[in-house]
Length: 342
Length: 244
Image 1 (cartoon, one colour):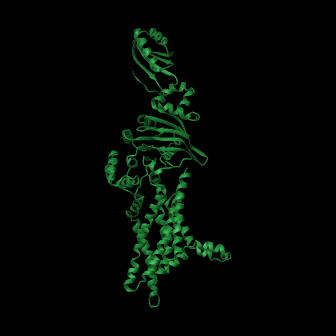
Image 2: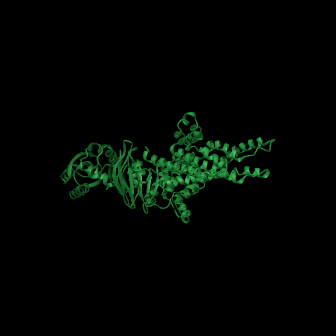
Image 3: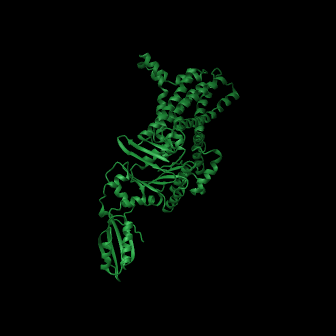
């Protein structure tokens, strides 16, 4: 487990990271999301022990990064934003240097290098000079370096930047596989990537943590006005009255006639979306109105992200953010939504 | 520590770098060797002296040592590989020592090439071995000090070329510390003069080249190397703090 307490970094008078605290659990993929210049790389550099912190504490498996650096750093594999490779070295030379640097026992080095090269599919370039490799391969060599010695924690700073879509998918699937044995902290400003890979997300902007939670919870908590789309077949008036009478339904905002007795209702609701949906369906069925389609509209991660980073800075923590009522009822509907068919 | 030492050596010896340096060093050495022989012509009373040769060879150091050391840290920074070293379980102090030892190894390789000149001489004449050994010890000490200095400069700069140029300027200036101490102005103040003179490496080297090994000189070079390496360590650590 990595514990980060009150981590702060000043560059001169400029505060890059502001008293952030969180933990990284075992076997978890933690996404680090934020716009450019939010303090992602600075935070990662501090966790990896490259940059000293202005204040705060990072503990990796019980070892303080500043007090027992060599013990702490043994448990970390770090891939910085620019892969730290020597252009004049061959791939296998470079990896064997890194294995030595990470104190992989001499006898196990060869097997270990073979393992990471297999994992990242770079065996076919092992005799090439790194200088001559493409960006994607350089990135993979850098990634391979981070995996050497099988560290428990991997810190990956924007591992998919500059890769083609095919390689991005590959790297993502590698990261997902790593979860079995490692914990991964992984930064990105690409939302779809984070939602595809991570268990939990930290949203950071201007050095402040804006939210830490799972993606589902984030999406749920930011559903400002809940909207339900119901498509029924039968009498329009009957259906409307049934829907309107159901507990939890606020109002019917629109009814569309789609021909052949099919009507599409858009309703807003208050309270727990799941129960309301169930009771609407139950009421309809009970009264002989057949339901063709029901789905709830919800804000996706993109909306949550934009919403969170544009908020004036609060101390931190999701709870605090939730305590104040969000005021974006209009916005949520404008943005495109993910549809969940039932 | 050893992997870094090995990697540094690889970067010198797997590329033409170390060989080119050694060749250049031998070429420069041979120039003074050649002049020495030329002066011998016609007179047997003129002793052919390696001491003098070593003395003039020091001048060439100013051009060679910064080129040897320029890449030490500036290159790591340029490639972004500094992060790799700093986040590995090897401490900064060990990194500095490993790199210093690697540079020293290349330097010894360069020096080894010059042994060919005493060998040639011994074929046709006599070499005073004890004096030669002293001169080699002296030149080794001087070079080691300049390597430490070059590493410090490399750790302060962003690009290798800049490190080389600054290194050349500073090393050139250091040659004249004793001249500075002996200027009419400074010699008005004997205390200041002796203080400045204490920093001059050239007169100390003169003792070595004449066949004296004095403890005070060894201590001078040794402490200069230690101070410069610690300074290098501090400058790397300081850079991490100030990075923006």
